[in-house]
Image 1 (cartoon, chains in turn orange, yellow):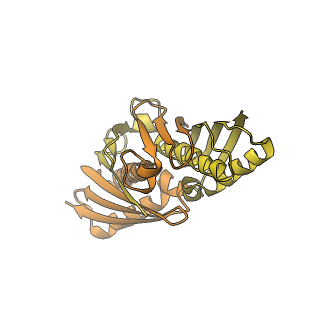
Image 2 (cartoon, rainbow over the protein chains, first blue to last red; image 1 turned 45 degrees about the vertical axis):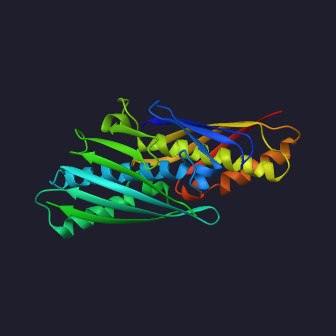
Image 3 (spheres, each protein chain N blue to C red; image 1 turned 180 degrees about the vertical axis):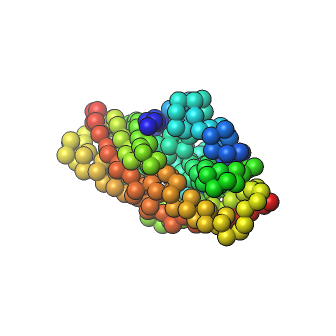
Length: 139
Length: 139
């Protein structure tokens, strides 16, 4: 099974310093600061990377489950809303998913959504976070 | 406290489909496929996003701890190695950190490394993963 790489550098102290995060694949390298993490400054932050990973993992996993049950989806779109609360602690991630799937009934769809929320690799990693999914079926 | 956004789209079935993950800040949007996630195909994957988030969060948090104790660092560099094992499950993330810090002794440095590993927000979120840190102090 694969091993992935990433890296980060932080230069200076917490408040005035600045950092960069980079993916091993080379597809992304971006800046972050105290302001881009805890305020509304320009840059990225670890929380939106976690949100993208959770949204991507869930969408892909749900496609796999739907395909396995005989309902290959046309498309699945998921937004992740990541709450960073006092602590600081990532308290909650809300996934809003819209899935275009022909032929499946609502109950079976919801069952596969619940299974994917619980079992996709990123969900299983983020056990310290309350992950919630609102999923809408479009036929 | 801030709320962050991200999104992902998966089009088609698990094996032949393809996806995109995107950060709410707009700093990154990138492609992923079955091959870029589970094999060695071109593209990104959720695991390296999680690795970048963990490396970034840990490095920034350690800077904060060092600053608070009177040892503001010059620079902290961390690589994350993310193991995706059977399941699929993110079983392990290994952080290799090099910190340039003047004046601190090894024992105090290691104490702050251990505290940061345990308490940075991404570590607290990833409680389903065995996170290990190898930290080296450079004066």
